[in-house]
Image (cartoon, rainbow, N blue to C red):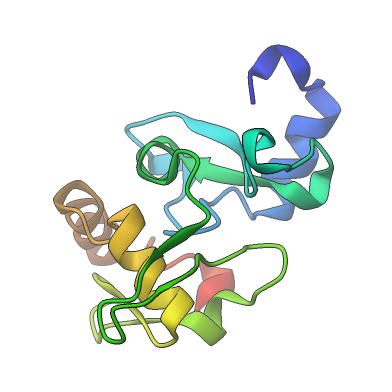
Length: 144
């Protein structure tokens, strides 16, 4: 969604609701080398709306990989499944961190498909997590 359609109040609601983190990879806006955007969970082209319940705060890289996708391939079952929906699903029910909080692993079909489709362990994210973990800024407090 273009920023021109979002009032400052809506933007503030989105950032506050998401704890200023991407709702998929949990990257923190304060440390992001890329901008964050407001994305449609279900794209307008697939019947989605501009309602707050269909909008999520997204790291630009995650948003780019998601694009208009609502489904992805679960690498275990090899079935197309719905991607993680940050307004309907709880992050902790679909994902876990490795011991060093560097990699995200999907523990459900939706979680695995989302990790795979959005490339939640791409090199730049893992490197950022490594640096932030070393200085005590990762994972975000709410996600521990």
